[in-house]
Amino acid sequence: MANRILRNTIVFTFFFLGIQLHSNAEPLNMNHEILGNYDLEVKGAPYGYEEGTLSIEKTGGRLESKIAMAGAVFRATKTEINGSNVRIDIYIEGIAMKLDLEYKNSILEGRVTSSSMDLEVYASKMNQEKDALFGAYEMEVKGAPYGYGEGTLRIERNGSRIQGNVEVAGAVFRATKTEVSGNQVLMDIYIEGIPMKLDLRYEDAELNGTVVSTDMNLELHAKKIEKSDAEILGDYDLKVEDAPYGYESGVLTIRDQGDQLQSEVKMAGAVFRAMKTEVDDNTVIITIYIEGIPMKLNLVYDDSKLSGQVTSTDMNLKVTATKI
Image (cartoon, rainbow, N blue to C red; front, top):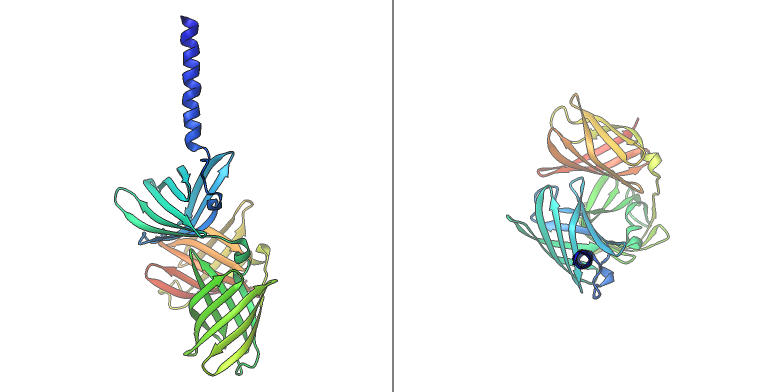
């Protein structure tokens, strides 16, 4: 009798463990194309949580996912894939949430719900080949008017959105629309009030194509500016245009702390340490709180200088920083 009870207990234990393992195991009908990294956008989410990255991975036969946003990484408690449908249970800042998504053509779309919200989610799969074209380029436009023949072309990714701009003749002109499809870049932009279209192709760290308006069709060539992380590290004399009194200038420091990059801003008699510092080629993204207000610096490094914008919920200011 005792042996029978022991045997039944062992059988039940293994049966129970099998159920537990199976619940996290890879399903037979899983679409493996779903695995990978995504640019994530949550429409209507609180500031700082509208954009981020979603990763879905298979580790030792188990599905795992995580979301990086607002300077933190949140790991899912449960990830399920059934065909092209994805279900993720996750805690974001201690709040239980569920993502119900459907995969189609490298896109995940659906909703994220909690006890108090129901928001639309859009996630676009990252493409390594496509990612290579992001950055800053030395630009030349053959036959352009004096002062407009040379400048800097930038293509940057901000969450799930792509933003392009052109710096020429001492001014920065932001594209109204920037699209990247494979190695093709299409950009609509106004230069000195004139609408123009850039049609470019990326190959071997170069963009080549045309810039067209109603009365011109010119050849454009741009070569990517490649910089190492080590070159970007250091102290910078920081200037913020139109910032409140006392916050117009300061010192920005970017340091390598072994396993991660760290940065801080000294201004108005205080030191503000960044929550997150990212460097990708010549692009620097810093997430930081200044006097309790969450802000993001999107900067591009070129010739010992950083230039770009600092944004928060109610401002978008120009930033320049010169290496000291």
